[in-house]
Image 1: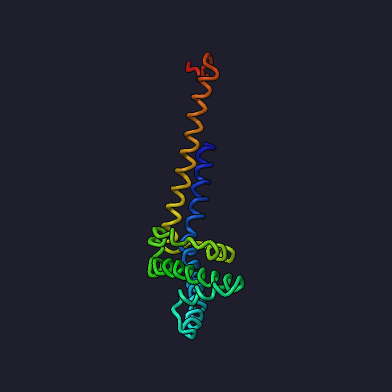
Image 2: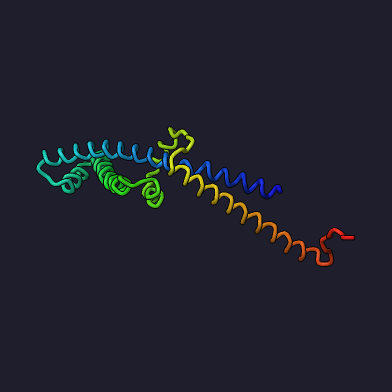
Length: 178
């Protein structure tokens, strides 16, 4: 009886947790889009500076880095911004237009740690009243119930085996029928 109650609680916990994925992934995409827009603006400014100097971006960064330690740090930061924009843009492109189920499949694209942390800081769980939220809740319930059920079964069978090894002469008491 206790096992059923505990596995039911695990199922409900899984349902509550996983049902929030559609909304979290939507808010992550919005935040990622804002970060891409801002970083694009910054990188465009770098491009305008390189163009004003009459140089391609790679040459501009190389020459800037050769001007001294301060400029070298600035060039490294600019190169890092450009690379990050590429990564973030690729992730946003993969997620855009994808529904909640496809976003779950593409969850590896929800990998920018800074954006995910900022999303989680402002995320407020909600009751999932959409088809997607209810589906994720159902999957979460089943996953939580199954995971705890398997763990409890494993512990129960392991305990029986351990008891048989530790106390070989002892048998479980059974109720006498009479």
